[in-house]
Image 1 (spheres, protein in one colour):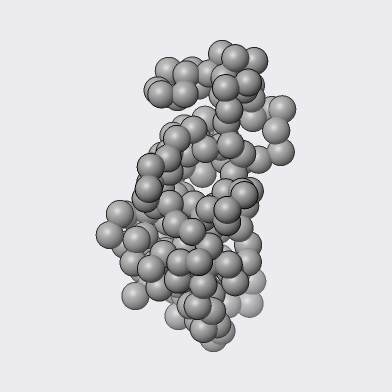
Image 2: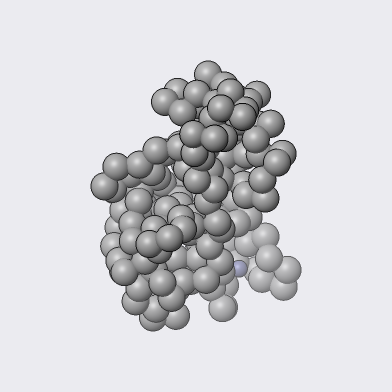
Amino acid sequence: MDAISLPLLSNQDTVHLALACLKSRERAGVVVDDGSQFHLLHAGDLLAAREACKKFLSEVGGSELVYVVGPADATAHGLDLVRPLLTQAEYQNMFTRIACQFALVGADHDTAMIVTRSEDYERTLRGTGGYECNGMPKHFFPRPRVKAGDPCPLPYCAGVISPAP
Ligand SMILES: [Zn+2]
């Protein structure tokens, strides 16, 4: 379990804005509020959406549902909502009961505080802006996590990874 702040956007916002937020705020994922639920979108899916000329976040596939932690969860599992890292074992226990990899513990108008089930996910989300390979067709990352200079991990692609422009 780990915690990270991510840009918070609405599904009416543009793919272009989301990618700009990832660069300026040094993250590789955004949280999207669709009015009733929160989803996490990875930089790789946003880069692929830009390549496919999709305009709005509502058109981007591949998002993952974010569980919203409420007072009942906090009571049931003994969670610290303000300083989640103080109750890591309790959050880990909650994650064994829910089907999500991410949970929302707080938000303001443009930032969401997320707890992640695995520390590996937290490291992935700290990568800035996303990556692409120079193969044909191009692939976009993270998912899986890559770094600049790696060979493209996808089969039958001889591309090399670099930060996405
Ligand atoms: Zn590739």
